[in-house]
Length: 340
Ligand code: TRP
Image (cartoon, rainbow, N blue to C red; front, side, top):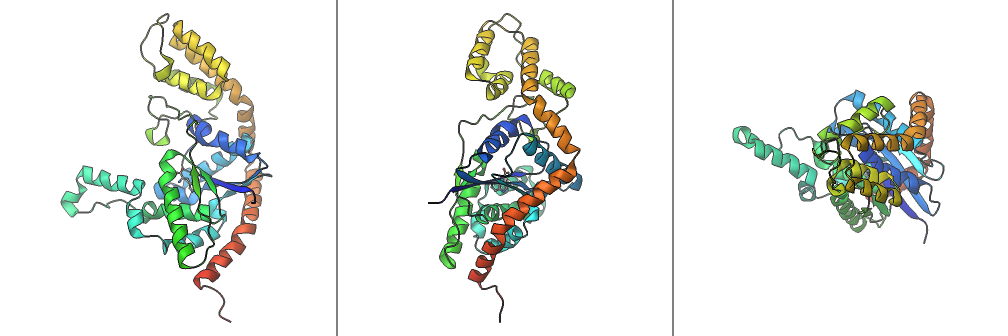
């Protein structure tokens, strides 16, 4: 058997934060160096348009994400790193797959159902009976775009968050329909959900997420970074009173970065009643040390957009070495080809 193919994308709608780093970016950067695998990483900028209609944000986020991955040492020689919109075969495949995807299947997608439910809860059905109010077709059919991302490169394994596993089931379903209807061209992909990957809490104690506005950007300048750490919500226990690490946001963040022995030491300090102010300063210094060098690299890259563009263009060229001939097989299979 050949090498296993891994593929994952990240939507370009926000500034990368500590939660993204721990959950997705750090494991990807590690995996990019693994020579026993073939891996694809991409900026999902078409996906961004589903939710974000501010061109400045989409553009800025693409830049920040690319700079982040590169600053953290993504191995772009051993892996293929590209921007989704540089691969015109992906939207083309999306249409072909759209015609293989059951509408009923997409009706059941969590993101779509949640949007409908929100309308039902708001009572928008009362005045015009439209539970689809404000929902665009991109939101409805984005699992097909995601299927095309994955099937385009015949990926076996797709590292994603738990919330994305349904999309992988849909990708398999759609691939199966195509294979059955036309020709067995697509690999059925599997989600890889890393249970041990930490899900970080944000400033307010809820899951760190751009939709809650509670994130700590990964490469915030030092001063602002410290300020944000100081803002993390804690309980009101006084210094000297033993504290429980298990429901503490500060502790959880530390744990996602530190070695096991350091975590043990800190547990002891919690038992001894570390003061919150002291803990925050400690966490800031620890993270700052950990991120300092990459932050310098990040700032350098942010000022060298030409270089980033060049890296992405090279990645796209490499990706298209695969996608162009493969899509041509797909087109032939469905009957779209030269007549004479
Ligand atoms: N939808 C994914 C998310 O929100 C991002 C994504 C787009 C993706 N295309 C993909 C992930 C293909 C894996 C494979 O996280």
